[in-house]
Image (cartoon, rainbow, N blue to C red; front, side, top):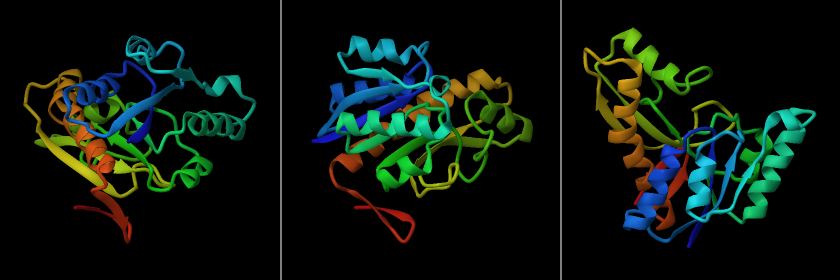
Length: 207
């Protein structure tokens, strides 16, 4: 049984997709053992409470330094006993200490087709605003492993989504969530839970 800790910052729609995936059998051999938020106002904490999942809030402002925050975050992860860390709409930059503690055991969902529209500053609605500004016709979402860079780790799964001419950023964001994020994040977790994923020479291999 794969034990996962899910890190969140806001509404928790990707967390809900994970919980629904486990309930519906789309994610097998998996248990969510803890939800960790960096915001006490995150609705994701309410979703965790309703599902009976232990949740904790670790916020940067409550610690004197980035190093102290990283230590607290790492402690919360280690205490959960999680095998895999899932960044599901998490806006926290994961420190090097945490990445080293969970090598190839942290995955992130990004709302674009990496390497497009990714890296520093590309998060949330900003991504979709830039997609529309650039005029691309296809966007999507990517699940990737987390390494020391920003959106630079090995890509696990991607799914394309059509950009429509009349789209607003919020409309596009919702379509990317529905058609891509909520689909490939559960798929990625299920693949990992069933031993079908490895990282070789900096790239993912799916068996």
